[in-house]
Structures are given as structure tokens and as C-alpha cells.
Image (cartoon, rainbow, N blue to C red; front, side):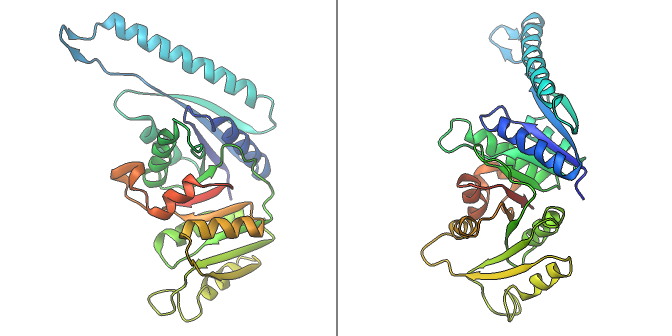
Length: 280
């Protein structure tokens, strides 16, 4: 079950919609939501005249804390109107970048909820940095919400992107609390390869049988990629089938951050039109 949600404030345009989605999730599952606002306090920087004066740093810290307090009050006023369990925390960091600090906070939650990058927005790289840290460093699944998309609950139809690998298996397992309410689940395999070391002799049947034992109504869809990317094929099927959620493994390399996300993960994040649960 989902009992704890963590939402990082990225300081970008989609945060407001992500908060709305987190509130809906908390209300639907009876969960507690923790909204975390990060404040990075710059360290003293040596310059031509020595270390930055303490007075200058003190004034800078005061301004950053004042702005964080202003945002904290705004969030508290909003959440105070909701009939859910919630808290707002301000996390000050000096030696750790905010995305990594958020990944640490996420380890104490069942699920992180955050905004997707807005197409063409100047702050898209910042969102991808937060996403990368949560995906690779927290050990928890990440539910990414499109900036202008309302989360539809309870879920009726979910699409699961499947291939027999660790990341996909982890994502599917992490998504089970969300899938439990769905009336139908499509297990989608793009360009299945028959064989013991690939998708098996009958692609999708084994994982569909596993989900059926969880009481889910499952439909296996083997979809050719044709001239599409895997991400495009998945998103198109999700749109055509009316899915409210897509579940996908997250691939990439944490040390290289957002630009080293796997191709499909990166494209899904950029072209997102529905909530996607990623797990690594």
C-alpha cells in the first residue's frame, strides 16, 4: 500500500500541478504527503580580496531563507484547505546539491511525485536533474506528472511497458499498489523477440499470468515498432487505449546525470502526456 508520498519543489513551472496530483493521490490512498522545499546556501568563495565577507554571506543567507519561508507559507496555506495528512519541510543544504538532498528524503517515502519538464521551457534541464537524482539515488519509484495534465483517480486503465529485465520488473512491482484499483492493464511489448533469453516462447504470457494472480485483468499487446521509437510506440498505445498511467523501467547512468538517461527513458520524459511511474 501507499502510505507516504514525497514531493520535491523544483522551482519550475510544473510544481503547482504536481502538488495537485500529490493531494489527489494522498486523498485516494489515505496517504501522508511531505512537500520538501530546498534552499542551497552558497559556501564562501575565495576572490581577489580573499574570502567572501561574513556580512555579505549573512545577507545572502537571510534573503534565501526569507524567500523559502514565503514559499513555505504559500504551500502551507494551500495544503491547510485539504482533508489529508501533510507536512511542508524546508531543507537547507551547503555541501549537497538539492536534487541529491531530495533523493535522500525520498528514501523515507513509498513514492516520489514530481513534475515533468515543460516542453521548450528554460527550466527543463533543472527538472531532469531532479528526476535523475530521484530515479538513481533514492531506491524508490518516481511518479512524473505532466505540467498541464490532471491526474485521473481512481485509475481505470494502465499500460505497463514490459521487457524481461531488472528495471521493468522493479517498476512493475513498485506499481502494484496503483494497479490494484485498475479495471484493466495492458502489458505492452514492443518488437518482442521469441526465445529463452528474450521474451520467452509466448511473449508476455508469463508476466500476464503473474499479474492475474494479483487479481488484475490483463491484456497482452505485442506491438511492432515499425518506423517509430519505442517511446513513441508506448505513448501512442497509451493514448489510443485511454490509459491514465504508464509504468516503465528507468534506464541510464546516475553518475552522468540527466543527459545520460537511456534513450527511451529520456524520450518518455520529454514527450510525456500522461503520468508515468518510473523505477530503476
